[in-house]
Image (cartoon, rainbow, N blue to C red):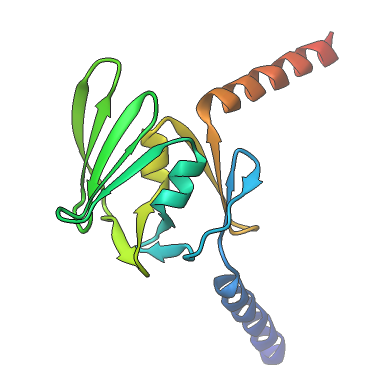
Length: 162
């Protein structure tokens, strides 16, 4: 009995260890994004390289080296983040309303790249974010694409039930 327990425990530890070693993938609107800096997990937050991810999502990204501030914008929102600060400014470009939001993990620099907590930042730019733990993959979709797919699926279900 003791041997069986030890074997089960050992297999579980090896599986966790192997999972920690596999790299985290990024899928944006169904396409895998390769980056020159790996994804980091910091304080249980998945940190992705901002420029590569946000330009792939159609955002404009600016960097101010003097203030260490990043500005990311699309046609709806503008976000301003500063390295090592947990405060983010989010401006709605249609209403000019600006909110300051506090997050639990500040942007950081790794290998000359800015890493940001992907879920919060992507959702703030009106994206849908999923984490697939088995595949160790961050999945990001445009909200309108997601909603259209969901409506199409609902319509298909209605047709099949008729």
